[in-house]
Length: 321
Image 1: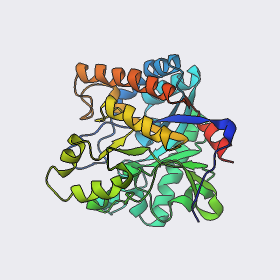
Image 2: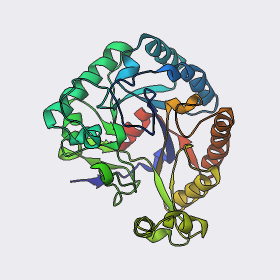
Image 3: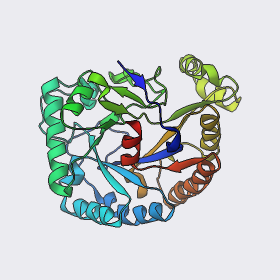
Image 4: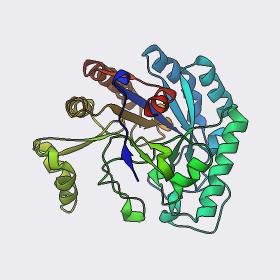
């Protein structure tokens, strides 16, 4: 049975940063196993030093193309040598062996695969990370946030302590993915005996109708431009804590609301290809990259003002005990 985690008083209010550390692919095209380029990983050492200077530890959720590419592995080792970095696992099933005959959008969500196939892919990824980087990951994220009915048990059996696959308030059922609309942003225990910590990616509803934000947002999705209209009118906005397509002013308001509602741990994230212009729709050119970094300046100031301090993965796991 799932149960909310009660954080110790001494833990305070904290935030984490998880980076989906992955290959580059065309975000507008069907996913393909041939898209394995990881050139953007070269930007991680300088990026990590920048976050270190800001006092922000980072958990890098690395996937199979990253830890099987010599240059990417060298860059990740350089990041680890700087300190303040933790290595987690991210499973993109379309580029992670073993491969099977299942095709189509549904198969891009790991939790939709047969249990034996999902298990085998987790094993291959875990072993590849351990061999390449010398650490066994304790945190996991399913590609496309695609956890399934067997995922928690499979992770617990392999010694994982924390999952961060749930994207609170989002729905991926259009192509047979999971539906998280009823899941909030608070961390909870899951799996057999509550052996696994679930730390959702933080989503906050803002606006005058935010207390029923999930319901209003879902209803507006059935009307053309309905969600945009609600947001512009200041009625309901759905805000994820990411620099990717989320204006800093909206995130600052979301942080204020989260603090007022007593949400103790916020989970921020972005995708590593966004560090180099042209790889994601969020950072298309140098101007977008400048806005990406400006976003962090504003948001980190807001987190500090709201009383949130940065936390490492180890600190989160220890506090959850």
